[in-house]
Image (cartoon, rainbow, N blue to C red):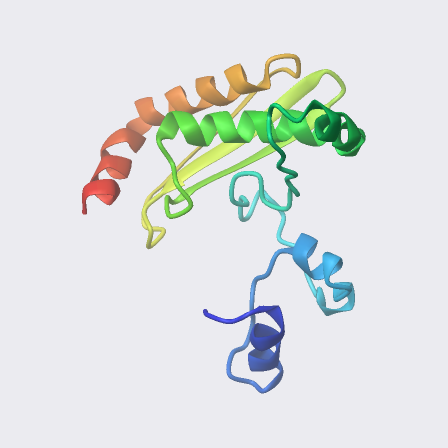
Length: 162
């Protein structure tokens, strides 16, 4: 569906559709948290890789700016993001790939759930792996290898070339 959040919500309000799925993080940032009627549990619908994470970019060589924004870094979020992004990277994913991942930190253990799917949902390859929070990217790559071994490689290749 095309359009900004206001346009999408207006279409919902005028009964052009029965329901809409939007990111809670975006609605909250826009002050529209009251419009959230249900939250999808990741066991039902895994989010896109790094969904809801706000990124800050600056020039690598700009040490002054990097030191100023370092206080904004959230270590728990970074750990989850590193695992999810490593998973997607190993799969060769892009923003158009049917890849999802969700990482959760429980103490020093990191649980990562990942998924690769046919675009129509007719086939889902989903797996979960846990490991040390000290090596989130390695955990992401290991889970990607398991999903590839289950058959994700040919599916993703077909989608890239099709």
